[in-house]
Length: 187
Image 1 (spheres, rainbow, N blue to C red):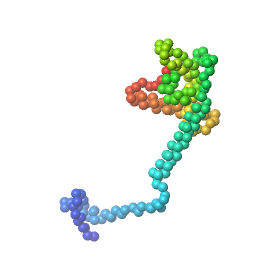
Image 2: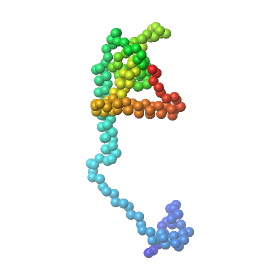
Image 3: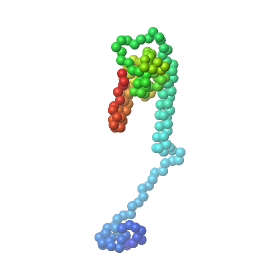
Image 4: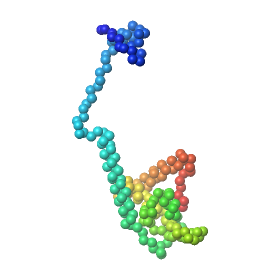
């Protein structure tokens, strides 16, 4: 077998200072052949295209569940009753704290009964709203279960609670990472 020197193009493979053993080893090596590629027929979607289509479908399902949730919140809006009172000893949460901690919108909070109170430090301020903490928790668990698309069965609200707890844990971990204290509800 003849050894043919290749022109030097920046690599050390064909340097003139090769030993006889290196030259003989190089001559014995078989040339590397390119792997044959299997051809995909035209019109067949690629893996990336299938993933994009699946993501788009999941996004539309999620948007549909969100619209259904908002529609149900608007339909089940609580009409204020001046004679409504919360039982004595009930844990309550104010409107702003409920929105901030549970990340609820005005429409979602509109489903729950509340009592109004006046701000004695600022007479011209609009009245505040106070919600029962247990009802807030139930609403949040129901929201998370509905938006996740879980089937309505006996464990519906319990699974929503697990989803909310996992979500709250990730938020708390992010706050700790940013050197802030963990969130806690203002009851």
